Length: 255
Ligand SMILES: *[C@@H]1O[C@H](CO)[C@@H](O)[C@H](O)[C@H]1NC(C)=O
Image 1 (tube, rainbow, N blue to C red):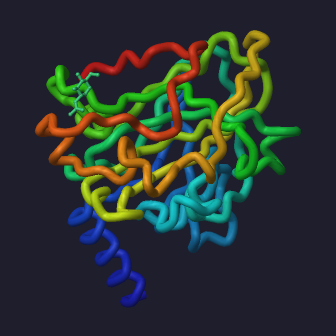
Image 2 (image 1 turned 90 degrees about the horizontal axis):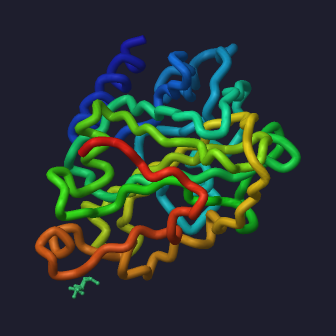
């Protein structure tokens, strides 16, 4: 017991000091759904229904060129729950916390689970469609997406594209922390995969990007870059993963 308490205490301090975080809840239509509860679910013999795939800890993905980048470092195991949503609905992703020292873009993708989310991993092929992104806009009071998320109480709201085809999807929500991105492989990706079932959609089945595969350690515009030089206007910034799909609804969060 004592050892567990010390471990919990250390985890608390390190999370405060380093401002890491993880997806804790998902909200949709006034209902709150639990994601994998890092730091407690791993000790349960029977884990209650969870709607996002297991995440190992609060840290970033250690090697973003591996399959750990797909749904984080938890084995990419199917979650037991799936959230029913209508195309065009808003979904809110809620973190345990997010500090302002880890600035960078926030990106959201959908991958259609084929044949369904009970077996789909999404770690091969161009399956990840970017549906939402807030990167860097120096004209805003809060220029970075991640700082916008922090300012909004560690929450992010994304709209499921109205014309996307019905079916089961992984909603991959991700923060990219750039505070040590000047070192090769220093960029800190914090992805999560929530399972949703979309109804009321259209006929669109867009092509996306591959994860792993599309995040290049030598991408000087988005990954191997320096936060302070971007903020001083010395270099421009382009988030990795390509542009947002044209069928997406622009983000409406106030920053
Ligand atoms: C950044 O992009 C803008 C717009 O395309 C351009 O005018 C500017 O020269 C670029 N700045 C740098 C440092 O490359």
